[in-house]
Length: 309
Image (cartoon, rainbow, N blue to C red; front, side):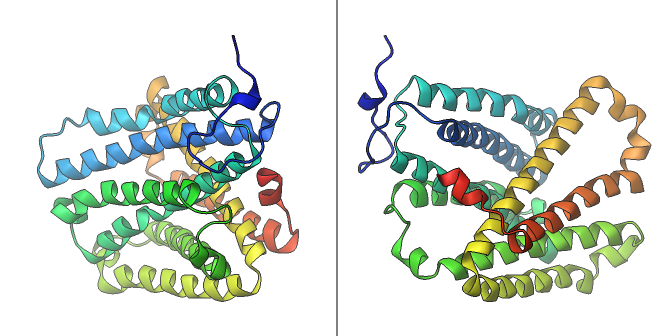
């Protein structure tokens, strides 16, 4: 017999809010995303660790990392269903405090997932063979563990409004993260564009490796300045940017699985490495950047408030 919502207990929080009769659709969506994305993240991180270990020591069957990456979509669906059942018929609490904590966990987790690529990016630009060294092989796993730990601590081991240092410097922290992610995205776009015309040693020259790091640092400092002035707008921009980039990643992953299953990947192999394939990645990413900025700073959307409730 299904028990009443008023009997639910939030296993992640000791100071939950007042219980409600049933979980709202907003709470269900957040719970399903939380569980599904964590499952996907674990598989993607494991694939990165195996690929790094294989480049460093060797002996890992090539099919293992690729199989884990292809399993990311089924893992998301299984995890999402598990989150739905956990909230609807399991021990998940449908309280306002529990929902806010899930939102905080999910937000920090997604930002941490995006920033987890930064150490590997810096290492790749600083070292000739990043995954052929012990540090290069360990970076994906360590970055993933740090992202997941930070999300857990921020979501479930702090006060209702987050840690005190975050409340004092909320605008600066949000601005730094938004600026860093924007800088990385712009650098990726520029590198992709330059890659269409730059071949040979030019790609690995010192200016080509140092310039992206300088650009990301400048963007981070600019984000700190903007976040100090309009923290709510920066939070909105960061939310939209992460959400749109996540949707882009899912679309690319689904497309890769479809090509692999249908057999079109082999027949389109020449096209996949051409200018058209590069533009198919560049255009959506550039559109996500522009759309997020316009929606947050010009249209002044309020997605965060609608999600939190």
